Image (cartoon, rainbow, N blue to C red; front, side, top):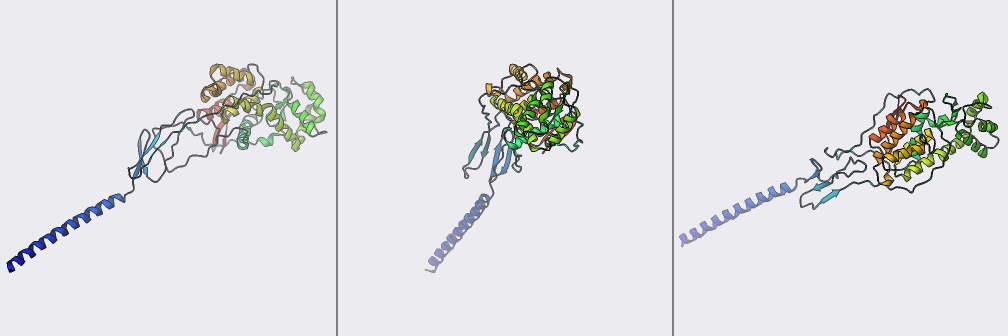
Length: 383
């Protein structure tokens, strides 16, 4: 009897020990699994190289070139997160309907009208925005603010006025140029104002006539007959020092400033921007058209804006015709440079070579700041 009890007790003790060992092993395995699950998952961003980023961050896909597709970026995560996202980026340019620009007598503005302002030696070079999809995506940096607005946007128009002023008046302060006037010896008589109206090419006469409409009896109204007489020539007859002094006095009159702004917009700015939009061009192309119209006038001969555009269209299709925007703008700048070189007063083509072409080569088709360029050897920056 004692032997039987002893044998059963011994077997029971052995079973208890075995069960306890199984429980300990199960607990150990469970702790190990829990520790592994607490580790944060990772996300692989697949471009041409594989980059690992924190799974709770959203990658920023940067570096798109206009007219091209950026490689798809696929987010790969563990099954437990059940996430699979793709990002495709493509830019579409909507072309406006063609608009007929107002025709006017050809007007060319001289190469350089004033002594340049002090150089800005702290110039930031333009950033090349060409895409490089072989580079890892940086998820910790935000892209620079951009704008796709056209030049009718107030901020974009202000940038454009500064760009043109750097070439026309060697300063970004275009609003200080209402009183500028002098004969620079280019056979166009007096050159004056914010974009270089000239007494020999009709636009100065038109502007003074409009000034008389909105401010009857103003200080320049008495010169209208003389301006009509010298229109189309380099003559100063009936103008002279008295006209120059009265022009400078009128510059303080808001109505005179309004008249200059009006002539600029009606004859040059609005037609240029509307034509550029009709050709499917964004802000840079609109500026390129406007600057060409300011210098060459909106006529149709080979060295006026209309002729330059026609030459470019023979070399490349505009975006509205299904062409590449960058290719077309290079063709336009080539045609414009050729037109400039036909006249000695325009043989310095830096406003094309070291300004507009710089922005185009950088892919800055929306004319976003910061901008850095040179005209006639002087450096400028708009931040």
